[in-house]
Length: 303
Image (cartoon, rainbow, N blue to C red; front, side, top):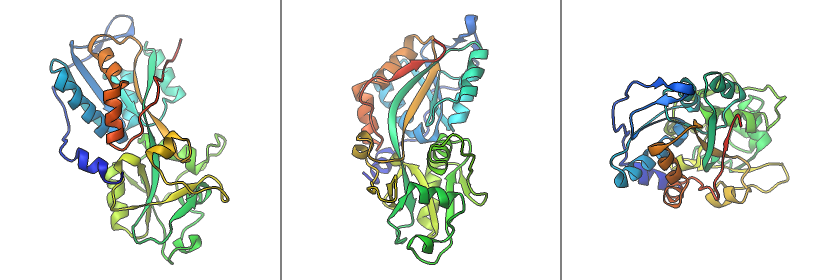
């Protein structure tokens, strides 16, 4: 699986099939847009998957114009709240305060689970450490463990690498790994954590820095880094992240990937979402190293 995503996607460049056109709120809080134009923005984890989806869909639907950009989950959701995009991609769930802002703006929000993903913990290939518990990873990122020798490795300082704060992956890792799912825990990343703006940047830094540890979506992992097996408990089984271990709920650091729209969707937007949830688009999910959904999963907030 490692490297499959890179080989598949290397020919893809950023797709923007048409320039952004002015978009203004219409009656009853809905958005007036050109017919056949879909603007999709958000998660950098999902951006390459969304690009391939858009390109493949347009092969059979050339009349539909699709613009895909990244910027982070928070950026995409803010644009949806502001009524300036049709679809927000997010690698985390919408926050209650974001949902409230959308409702105050007159929008009901529909959530779609469009894929799943594992968060792989990665180190330099020459690092002798092969496995870690969730607690050990949390203590690393809280600067409670600062040298690889404390984990059976070499006497080297640990360099912590993370996505930047606007990233949904950053938020998920903070809540599920550093805080171990405890909503009352207010722990944060150590202040010396190196924050990077892209998934590719995480891989490049860990590849080039023998002291580094990072985390990234499964679809971005390449043979240039070593993936650590992870156990939920010290006496538990250490699991390697794969499509199978995510689908079987064995790997402890996995999450759903989302698309959010306004509730009133019709025409090209409805058809495109329906296609993403179908077999052809879900096979692309698998090809790119993510985990396909097994059934339709969506909900409308505010009902």
